[in-house]
Image (tube, rainbow, N blue to C red; front, side, top):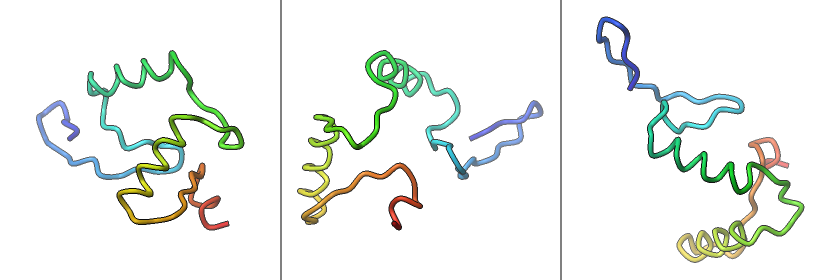
Length: 79
């Protein structure tokens, strides 16, 4: 939720281009992002990433799908 100075409450349920729906500075999420940034911020999926491979295997397992493809955007997904 977002709160105005007078206490009006708004549910922020929107995201957009290059936006992550992670809330607004929640301390636990901010700490997790900082820890990840200290390790690796971004890399192309042209390279094998062990954590990504493990996540793909788990997603395939729980979804019943045979293949998982991580993309950078909806446009890539559609292509």
